[in-house]
Image (tube, rainbow, N blue to C red; front, side):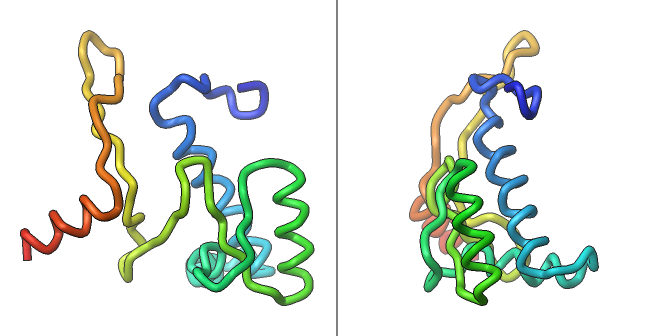
Amino acid sequence: KEFSGIEPSNPAADRSYDAGAIVGLAIAIAGSEDPAKIKDAIYKAVDPAGTPIYAGKDEFAKALGLIKDGKPIRYEGVIGPVAFDKYGDITGPFRLWKIVDGKVTTDGEMTTDDVNALQAKLQ
């Protein structure tokens, strides 16, 4: 909270943290402020063949060292392993939220397997 201003109990706090971490790592990988290079580097920040990187200052320092050495990384965030589809959309897991009287609460969760099964049914 001290860093982001987001209450840790906020239903989106973990996703917000991971989003910022992935973008930061992608900028480091891209070595540029060019949006196209950053977009391409986002996939490299979650490379399945990369060294796992978890949340936290020491882990980010480790990631930056690996990036500097040209080695692949795989950010596994607060929400767990993260992957993106060909459109740049996260593939899961997802939380199902409910808003009642202006308060957001978590009402359930869909795993990546749940999302894949639903997508298969819709196609």
